[in-house]
Image 1 (cartoon, one colour):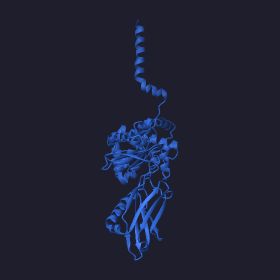
Image 2 (cartoon, one colour; image 1 turned 120 degrees about the vertical axis):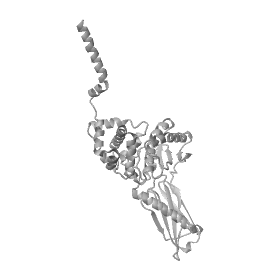
Image 3 (spheres, rainbow, N blue to C red; image 1 turned 180 degrees about the vertical axis):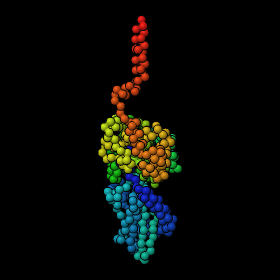
Image 4 (cartoon, helix red, strand yellow; image 1 turned 90 degrees about the horizontal axis):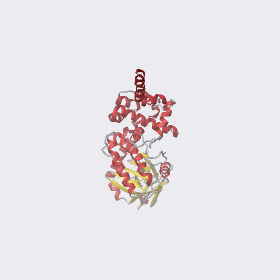
Length: 398
């Protein structure tokens, strides 16, 4: 889930990342001569602890200083470090407790050499994937999806691939298909392991996680007995976040959280059974959370977060019942065109967010047990009473 919204940069971040990628491509294509310099670079890391960027110089006496640059999609700015004490072999450590990288992100780095004569050389950019190396991962790639998991059970990877294949037609009925819908899926062996991986990288956790900007989904399968049911819940949920990001791109941030999470819950085969009772209680107590408060984030408190999920799912069900799948598609189109939490609803459905919420609340009003009984059994009661009346008339005529 993305109860505490996945680490996503602002639209500015993503635009900056696109420009940065173009810049790095320019470096690679215009500095091929640097490949002939007597300098060699590499990098290694201890997950969640440190990245060691290494540079080997054959002729350090000719170099006045070197500068390291590195970037990842989730970082706001390029990391820059200048080293003036030059030796044959340099190691520059980056503390990952201070620079928080997302698990399985792609790190791009390069070095700039400045000679004592004032010349500047750029070494070609290099990349590596910041894989959680605390585990030995098995992999299974089919089409454009790579599944990675731990343990010796080869069937787990195929199960995940089957669920992905089953889910895609369901999502494509709701979300326009993106040109590139491939992704990497990592299945952690326990919730605690996933929680630990996210927390040491400075991210919170609520059961599963998506880095849609990285094309990475993280889920758990604790044991073989429950793996199928667990993955059938978590994989479709996280795929929704990914598909929405791939369709909306930089406008993904325009999505209200209630819509993003509500749609993700809508495609789950069996949403949390507690949602119905939590929602019914909140409606009866007039303590629902205004959807205006669920546009940018969900509450931190667990009970309020569960209520936020329950409301979001219920509202998406209401929209689907009243407007059909086309209503959901129109909302996606409105947010893709830059609509915000309120204007997107009005543009797509022709109704204000306030009026939509009022209509939804009205549909959720809890009736008294007696009223509910008569609503469900009224026809049979009328027939029964009618039968007694007819029987009484027959008896009186005798």
